[in-house]
Length: 264
Picture: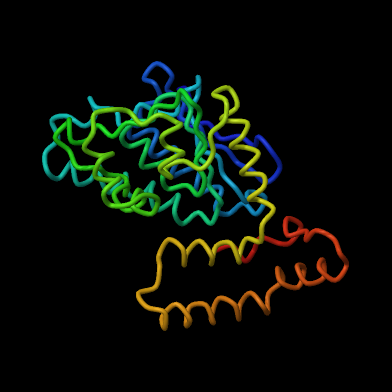
């Protein structure tokens, strides 16, 4: 049976997961979701993987959820399906990896939610991002009403999810849905380069920074408490020891060479 999720290593310390259903424009079904869960489980215990690129084959990220597999479900089946979706979301969010989404071609529905779970999104001018949920009688899923609001205002998010028009790569960059606009043929290359850059950052310090940015404190007092705990761990850990040594020796820090045991 052909693998529906391909795992490879396009650069040192960078893993890549690509949806491999070209005949279905890389639509996401149960097998694809399980492929991501299995691959991410393996990567979680791999200290040589520090960053992850998400993409699809044949110049298409994904046309979204595989609609025929979503029809004629009873309530229990629909709930079970969503629990499986959420297992993928959690696996990505809790991977400890820096995640870069390479949005080639069409990116619709569920695929948008998957992409938004990443830290950095690369698009091209011909990228088309679509939010088809309401036209199908569905509310957005894959956590994207939360992750989209991490990037844009409530008003912009409302416009995006209620509009039938696709969002172009250029517009995605201008409103903050994407982080980088490149030539369409260079999207994957640019994503790998960015993932490689992120892989050289200190894992523990980056993880704590990400957690506080995306799960903000409710007050300044609460934030200062979290900051104190985080910085105490960082100041007494191997990453600061290397950063300080590199500063004193007037060289770049070699965080990549440290053990990745601190990633949890």
